[in-house]
Image (cartoon, rainbow, N blue to C red; front, side):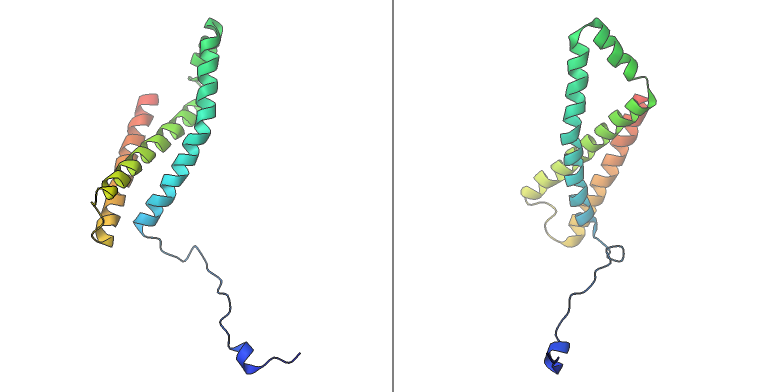
Length: 132
């Protein structure tokens, strides 16, 4: 089989280096909103287990209360609260976009995404202060 000049000049697949691509704030906000939703979905199992254990008996409640004093448990609860805060802020942004706000330009979308990042960061720090 002989290669013709026409076949050699065809467009070939391009390797995309994702580390070189600059994502806009709106794309990062969307990706993080989905990730925080997945984290919250997984957190349901942990939280239901803690609730069921605490409601079994007085000793179950005591064991859950002691668990909250351990550093790994505090980190897990902080991560859950951070995911909840980000998902809440991102959800409010999406509701406002459904009302027609922040849709005028790419800049307004980027600004609203940055506000979500800042609000979630503040809520995450407050959750950390509250836990520790």
